[in-house]
Length: 79
Image 1 (cartoon, rainbow, N blue to C red):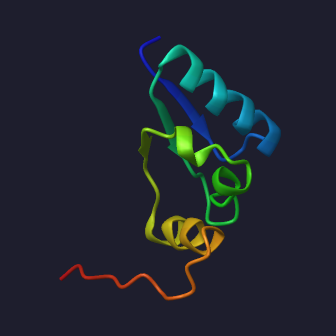
Image 2: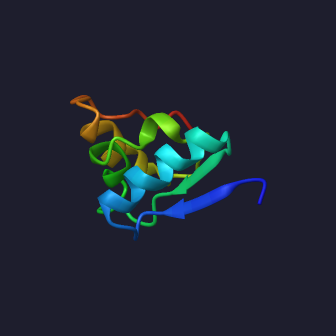
């Protein structure tokens, strides 16, 4: 496979293992957060550093931002 795709349904431990594996074998990792409730697991699993691509919704992005310690709201600048 040219890329590994992982979603937010995996346990944090699995996310950690997959992230480290992708880094070791130099494979891009795509993370699909799945829901705003599961999105932060990519941060708490310490796997975010290995993610090459991510496809969050606005709510999922807010969840990831909060898990990273951002307290301000993300402003939606779409017109």
